Image 1 (spheres, rainbow, N blue to C red):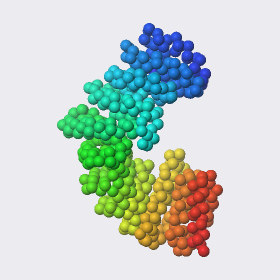
Image 2 (image 1 turned 60 degrees about the vertical axis):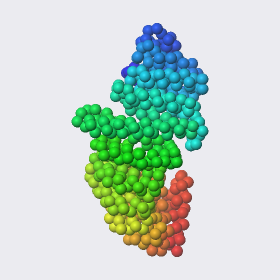
Image 3 (image 1 turned 45 degrees about the vertical axis):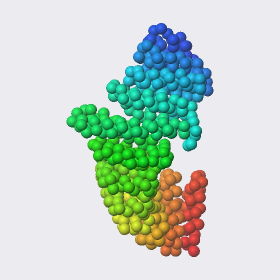
Image 4 (image 1 turned 90 degrees about the vertical axis):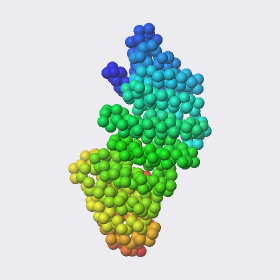
Amino acid sequence: LASATCLTTLAQTVKDEIVPKTLPFIQNHIRNKEWRLREAATMAFGCILDGPDKEKLQPLVSQAFPVILNHVKDQNDVVKDTAAWTVGRICELHPEVIGPKMLRPLMETLVQGLTYTPKVASNVCWAIHNLAEAVEVEDEQPTSPLSPYFQGLVKALLDAASREDSDEANLLSSSYECINVLIKSAAKDNVPTVKALIPEIGNRLHNSLRASQGNNANGSSSIHLNIQALLCGNLQTCIQKLSLNDLGPMMDSFMHCFLAVLKSASSECHEEALLGIDAVVMKTGEGCMKYMQAFSPLLFKALSNVLETRVCAIAVGVAGDIARVLKVKIGPICDNLVKHFLRNLQHPDLLRTVKPRVTTAIGDLALAIGGKFERYLQHVMGMLCQMGQTTFDDGDEDDFEFLDSLRESILATYTGILQGLNEDKREQAFLPYVNHVFKIVELVANDKNSVKSVLDGAIGVVGDIAQCFGAKVRQQLSHPAIETIIQRGKSHSDTKVKDSAQWASEQCRAAMR
């Protein structure tokens, strides 16, 4: 393993020069009767695939590929394992050598390889994963090179995940994750197979939930929790892939599964279940309203789970998406959402990188409910104004990256609040906070290292305020920082920022008349 790592690094460093140094060894031993030499040559070939010029290497890969593929069926398990890994490298780095003539024997070998030892089968999963990612399928594309093999691959992967030894060599996770990639790359002619797959995944999830409830006292429960997370991921991918017409009444059963998983004790399961629910929300739109009574208590629980950073962050994203699709219909849970958002922004145990997401979700909510957000304005604006003054005198790269993210989210949220209020003719409620908003604009104007998105956000807020309030904010618009930030935008290399600055400049001139 150490020598393989060294050779891989050398290939990436010296590039083309590695080929003549290693090729004689590979050619002399790739078919050697001694399995150790045969395996070493196969490993060496896999190691030099990344680094040398692809066009120069392609003829060699084409020539060696049938030999290496045959090694996947070698009598020796070590050779099988290395050959499967090398095939995976070829699928990842040189998929163009796999033409129509080689695709069928490749598929047959990979399906057979999924029945070998867990280590070999796991590498086979990786090869299928890489090959599926290499196949570019556009929306509504009628077919793809993998279409004829899709059903057989999925069945073989489901069988691999069901093996008694699937907990070895990460085979369980590799199998289900590979199915995800296949679904994502599926063409239109594979849609019936994807639809037919859903009941099987649902049954496996139900069985695992039932089994884990009976095994909470012993170690096997952790295996079931892992299975549940993976199966939730499969269902999520199916939802994203298929149309609402294709999914039809299955949405109710999806939500039933996801809600059941959310009630389990595993944070990893919660992540995948929340992502699955988010897929349902985005697919059904306003139709997701019927699930809110059952889901909202679990959403609030996830938002409160500040020690599980990913769970909390995903829950914040789901809440923002719900606001965007439900708009004013989100009213019944608004008070609770805002309470949890504000609590999270103040919580010392919540990782700071989540707080910009919370801020953005507040902006989504404000834009969704329009004038009804006025009732939360005092508390929210006070929090945003306080956060907007965050600076680092002697920060590191992570500090300044966080600062950019925080400022971008605050500026976007100011815009969302103002636009939402304006749509319902309630923009005057925002006027008392204009001075606070311009404080963060001034910080951005004076920070020459502000990234493009932050600069664009600040310019946009200035333009929105000038457009909404006109002469009422003439004094604030005359501050030198406003002219500074607009001029920085006009001279920026990005066309979008230039256009924003030009528009904001016009709004400011109109307000100053």
